[in-house]
Every structure is written in C-alpha cells, then in structure tokens.
Length: 130
Length: 384
Figure 1 (tube, helix red, strand yellow):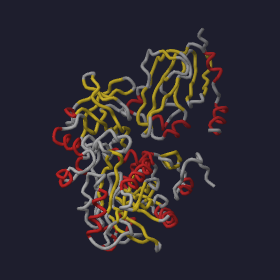
Figure 2 (cartoon, chains in turn blue, purple; figure 1 turned 90 degrees about the horizontal axis):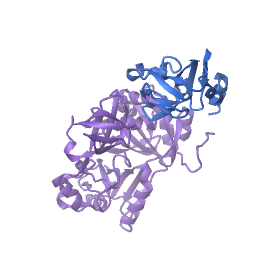
Figure 3 (cartoon, chains in turn brown, purple; figure 1 turned 180 degrees about the vertical axis):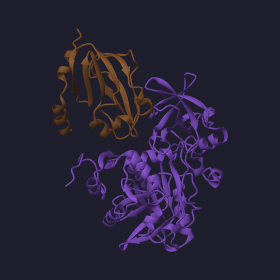
Figure 4 (cartoon, chains in turn purple, yellow; figure 1 turned 60 degrees about the vertical axis):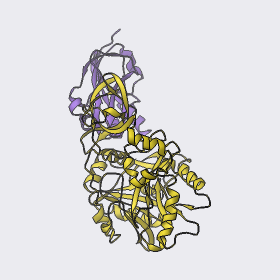
C-alpha cells in the first residue's frame, strides 16, 4: 500500500544517497560527502523513466575521472522523472549535490521502506566514522 | 606517525610527505601510494600548464653491469648491450653515451613481459653498465629474469630503495634547472649524472605524461629534501596516481598489464618502432619469427585510440562492436581532462584500425557511438 508523506522529509543511506519524500514521490541524489569523495563528476547515467526498481537495485551510475560508481535505489518503485540537465552538466553534482544535482524521482511503492534510513544527524555521525 | 593501510605494503621514502600533504593513500603495486591530493582533474590540468611532482619510487630502477663494474671503453658498452639484446628487440649497442631508449622485455613467443627504459651512461669511464627502469608491478619478475639470463655474465644492482620522482610539465625545466644547472640542456630521452647537496643523482629527460619533464633518481634523504624544496615552489604541486593515469592515457602511452601483457607482441601493441632495423634484420630476439611474420603480414589485432563520441567514458573491459559483432576490447579508458571528454585505447581487428572508423562501445549493456582515433589525444611537448 502506498504511504504518502504530507511533509517533505529527507533521509540518507549508508551508500551516501539522499532521498527526499513528499507525497508519493521520492527525489534521489548523492550526498555532498559522496560528491566530494568522488571528485569531479564527468558523467551521470540516470535511469530511464518507467523503469521499476527494488530497494537496493542499481539505479544510476556516477563517473569521476578515475572510476564509475553505482548508485542504488533507496526505495522501491517506478522512476517517473530523470534529471536530464545532468547529461550536459554533470558538474552540477559537485556544485549542488543535494539540490539541483538530483538524479531522479521515484514514485515509491512502500513508504515503510524509509524506516531503515538515517536522518541528517545520524548520517553526519555515520560519515564521521567512515 | 602516519597510519599504514596494511603491514604488507611497502612505503617509499616520500610516504610521510604525501600523508602530510593530505594525499589519499591507496595500495598500488605493493606500495601505499597517493592516488590524489587536490583532485584528479585539477592535478592533471596543473601538470599540463605548470609542473607536477610525482613519486614513482615504487618503480624498479636498477643497474646492470659487467662483472667488476663499470670501466672505460666502447667495447664494454658493446659487451653489456649484447647481453641485454638477448631479451629485448631494440638496438642497445647503438645507444649513444647519455642516451635512453624505451624497449620491451619479451618472452620466447614474442609476448611483452614489461616495458622498460634503458640508458647508457655518458661518462667514458662508466661504460659496461646500463641504467634500467622497469615497472613496479613486475619488477621482481623482471629482476629474477635478468639474474637467471645473465648469471655469471653481468651483475644486477637494484636501486628501488631510493627516491625516484618525476617533475613533469612545461615549467618543469625552469624549476629543475635551479637545482641541477645544465639539466635544461639535456635532450628528450637523454640523462646525466648530477649532484644535489653533494649527493649523486641521475637526471633523465623523460616522463609518462606527454609533457616535457624529468625523472630523478636520488638517495632517500636527499630525495626527500629535494621533494620538499620543489613543493615550496609556487609552480610545483604534488600529483597522485589518478592524474598520472589520465595524463598518460591522453598521451597515448601504454600501462603494462592493461594495454599490453605477455599475450601481446610489440607489433600488436603498436610499438614496432622500438625494434630498430638492425634488430629486425638480425632476427635474434625472443619470438622473432612470430614478430617478423606480424610485421610482414599484419597482426590479427592492433592497439588503437578510441574516442567515445557520447559523454559516457568507456572503461577497461568495454567491448568494441561493429554491426553487433564484437571486434575488440577497451584496455584503458576514462575521462581526459585536457581533451574535455572521454578517451580510451584498446585492441581492435586489424582491418578496422583506420582513424575515423565508426564503432559501438558496449557500456553497461548500451551501445554507444565511438570512433577509432589517432594517438596521442594531446600533442606531446617533448624537447627533442
């Protein structure tokens, strides 16, 4: 059953993704910490709209000069929008990782999946231990 | 005290310096080495515009000399050159005093065991000895091969307990000439014995970036002292392995174990230029029959540059397709900061090596447009 969030809330994963839920939609990106670790982002492969993913599936790929890194789906659902701006401006991920550098929007199928995710303070502590 | 990643990893004499400069340390070729300081992109661009300092002490500098050590006379050079020519297809005998040459170590099938630079000392009284630098990842195998091959006929002296550093970029020459007066007069692929703080050093005008620059072999304390001094110069920044890889890829230079290995010959690797005419005519190197056949009739596959035409980089292992058929594979690929786009190299069927030939690159299951490209991707700035 779809659980909807009346307020916008942002969660974080141990794989350094952020996910902002609002209503039935979740906007996903990588955190500023992750972007800094990667260095200059040179390519982002966003998922095709209409793709359905399970939590933990490969959702997108972000590439730095050095290497390609997978980005995993923080929630299950259907991709309803992808950030097309990243195709020509992948550096947006470095400049605004947690706003304009979003990767895609998922219409999520199970709001209860947010339960295992971290809030901002917990994520901050998690990064300190990395 | 700097923390080490693993006890099994060796460190270079510059390890503490890297850590103090904020270098991100990773395991590489059995050593703990800095992969980046400020970031791959800015370090790459800095090296192309100014001067970048690289610690390459993990590599395998060594000296091969006739029993009893170096001595006077061209006959001594001829003698040591003849020994080395048993395992490489380049003409070492024709090296002039002070000259260096890139070559490859071959197995009996003509497969490449390593690529290496062999230099002949300039001094008339230091003949019968060669300064050789082999790759870090295979240095122990190479040295074991030398010891077996030349047993009783030559002595190997390893020098990988020293500092080997590279200063690369258009401003490298002006910076280094302050510490090694006269090094500006060295030509590309030449070297000289010089002094720093009263200690002997070998200064070679060569590198792995496509830029003008130098590699310097020094004893540990003086090497550390010079590295600190050079980094004090506003024209010099420390550069990690990440930018070293993107710089050499843009320059079209091979990385051993990736762009060539024991399964590839110098002809397939597009390194036939390392085999001088005299050696081809004598056909007296390992695997000569196969290599000469490939020179005459062409190999089945050849190393080429590949330019992905979309923004997605094609990394090592990416399949190269033409009309849905696999025709090759990428062996090195990434983003070229100076090219401002993805660049790669790989092996492709010999009938498809013409620059401009359209290909498809299978990146994560998607065919993406690419084309065969001439190497290098950037014009080299060597001082010939």
